[in-house]
Amino acid sequence: MYLEIITPDKRVYEGDVTSAQFPGINGGFEVLNNHAPLISALGNGTVKITPTTGAQVFFNIDGGVVEVQNNKIIVLAEAVTA
Image 1 (tube, rainbow, N blue to C red):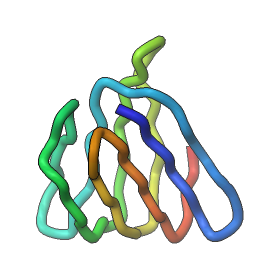
Image 2: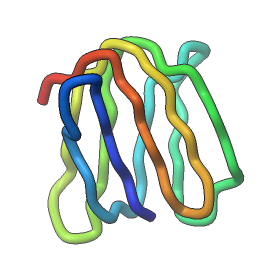
Image 3: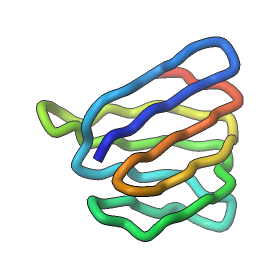
């Protein structure tokens, strides 16, 4: 899967991942390869990414929206800290 995390100021992350966990407004959820299409609001919390080529990466976000479609994940976040 391909993941992009974008804020109003910059692109924070882009690359291939095997999984991504998100802080949904009604609870956390995980996206894996071939996930059904999805649009969800995100709350404040930690995004946990497992890249295909390395150790897990964590980002703290201040809310936003995630879209999943055709093995591509786009996160539009208010603000992100690593």
